[in-house]
Image 1 (cartoon, one colour):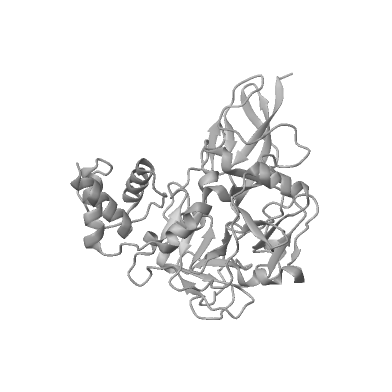
Image 2: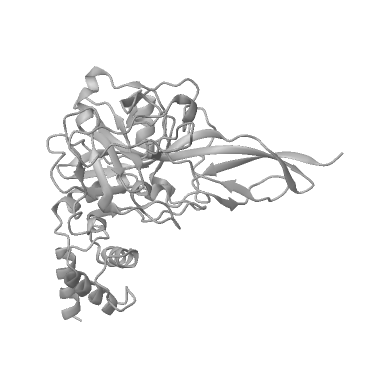
Length: 406
């Protein structure tokens, strides 16, 4: 009889390979399931249904597809998602969706300042190797409210990317995976969130686990398969460094994830379009944001016969993943108060200074691209500045002073 063994494999974000223990070291498929809702509604004829113009005020998101066409991303056991309870009704003005009219994709997002929202980086910039949709084609809207849609700042001047701070642009989906960097702060073209900002509390995954054990952790998001874009409330759920309270030992490690210290595993039930939604805790002062939901961690099993894979079991979710607020809380005010450079002349001057500092390869182009973002981040880290990675007036002046003192 041929030698057969079952091996466990963890799938985490994207597709790649990694080694794992057992009788042999064999490649393991690794993937991360994103809660990104594609707004193209596939009918039985496989044609996309028409979508409403979200850019107009007081429009609604596209109607969700039927349950037969939508699979739940990560529901643990019984589906505990329900409509937002009355006591949390104010969240309707604070949590919404970002929609890109070019790619027709939807993610959740939430207000953190009068003119700043938070979401997942992959919702805006996609993953490594993918071409991101134009940020000028995004809208932020709050379904079920009278609030109109609003575009990203810089849309009129085609400089929207310069108004977005992100943990990483084009996150890596192969181990070690950049899940804990999958966050973004987006400046809006108007203070559409005034009076609706959610308080963001810096909290470690261990702190979040304490709150979850006390029954105070929940998620609020928009799901493609829930209530025709009604806001869903997921609770009870566990959160922390482990996917469930009864899991023995940590499952977050340096082999699978980059910077896992800010990564939260949670069991709040999610669905398509829930990426970028907040994980919150209930407090005497009201709901507070402690993390951003970004994807799903799943496990597969394969049967090995004579060194080859002969059977694969269907993947099953282990936990959803989120980024702790520690990763981005300190940058919200800095982005809000920043004066962003938008002209090619200013960008070219900034790039020349970065080239002189040997942080960027020349010549200066006057265009804000990923290389310039990375060079800015390197400079900010070296100078002990708040890391934004975007071109600002203060940064240009700081670089100029550094250049004249050398």
